[in-house]
Amino acid sequence: MRIALILVLTLVSKNILADTIEEIITILDKKDYSKVERYIEKRNSSSHCSDPGEIRKREIIAHYYEIIIPILIFIPTPPGKHIGDCTYYVINLLTNDNKVIKYEVYSKKFDDSETKNYRLIKEYSNQQELGSFQTAYKENYYRRLNLVELFDISTTYGSYCGIMGINPFRTQLEDYILSKNVEELFNWLTSPNYEKKLYAFEGYKTLIQSGYKITNNEKNQLDNLKTFKGSVRTCNGCMFMDDGFRGVLNRINNQKFDSIVRKTKVTINISSNNYKQQLPGNSTKHESSKLILIASLVFGGGLIFTVFSKRRNLSGKI
Image: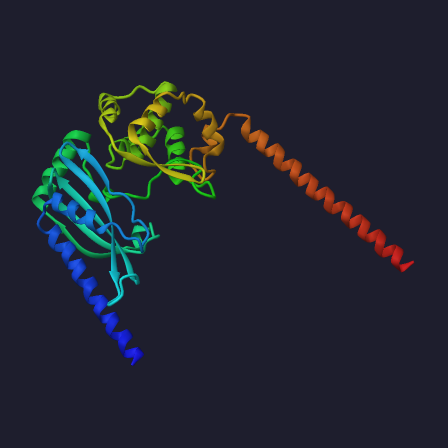
């Protein structure tokens, strides 16, 4: 009897979950962002579940917005009110003002930030509207946008992020600075991702203070950064936080980066093709001397150990 009851409750719970997903999609299919926003305000709260996080809304170009919405839905187990399932979703939206021109609905685990683990439930794209968006993007940023660049939540601006202090974007930035790879810096500068824009701004500031002459297109994009607003994900060691884009931009702008080029010469990945070329002329000799010294110590230690071992063996035989 107990097993049968559990099965019934499970089936009922799944049906409620299915209805809820359909409800989300029904609202999205009206292509009206204001209605989606009102729905989220009602859903994203429960004393039984963890907070799903804040909505991220960023203007990519005039009138076009990239919106990432975390959703929490608490499904009570009938007839109880205090037990049930906390289900989490993510909706990625691209809007032209209030009109939804693209959406993706994913289910996810609460603490999983790896988008590759998300399960796609439904997606929609208005190809004509997307074509207009990409045309406008190219006119603004002098390059074509690949739609996979949208909805990036993997980038954090900062240094020594996390317990291990690993930051692949910082490493890439140092590589771009050393090799003066302005093509990749420009791709970051014109990316829809705000954190990459900050890395690019820092890279250009470093190169400019080292004598690089920027083009008119680069100058226009760097000046245009002052018009952006909204929050960005930042880190400093193990501390992760949301910070204002303009505040971070101002802090970068007030720094001097002429010494960073010298610092990055010793922090760049040794596998970089530019590593040996960028090091000062006496660095190779210095490293070689250290290697010779270490080898000598190891060899000398081994020789002493061998001599003592032989003496011990001889004394044992006597």
